[in-house]
Length: 211
Image 1 (cartoon, rainbow, N blue to C red):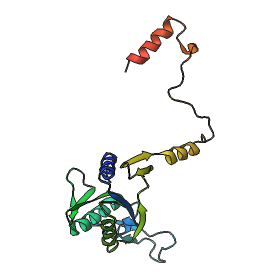
Image 2: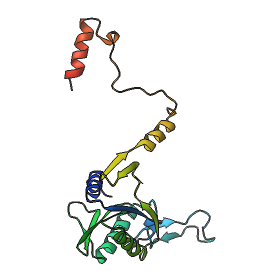
Image 3: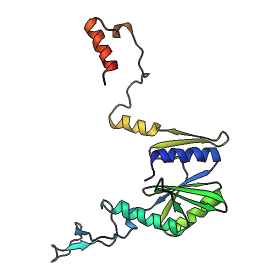
Image 4: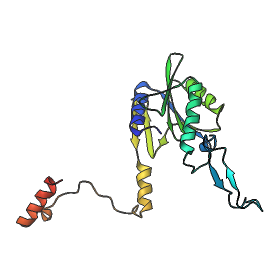
């Protein structure tokens, strides 16, 4: 999973270089990998074979909620990208780079999402076709929303703004605070908040100096 600070750097470079940014989602990503260790599981409810209730299943493919699933999926995706001529960065193992016609293409990986950074739409489409040749994928188009980030882009000014309005609203709704009145932070200080005596003054001083 690409680090957030790395993704911010890539978005900054994309804004400066005026790169196209698209997003692809791998359908049921964890089911693509083949596990390389022996794992057994109980027969799923509703599919238990009569007379063989004590038998277990020997897994050949990865499953969701399997502890090995994320690693198996990453290794599969990594090997596929390397086969296509990409190089995984040493400083960031979840970022693949490749020069195509002397133009840099960057693909940061986030679980089952591939974010395609390329100087032209043609290169983006080329990478989409390569990805579809191996995995069943959903084309999400231009990148506007990822990791609870909302991206607002101005290509003329070469800027990308990151906001989290939807995320904040969902948190407020979850805890029943979406109808609360807003207030400015920090709040406006009043005389009533001043210490009324020596003890309160010392307590306020300690709150600013003590760790």
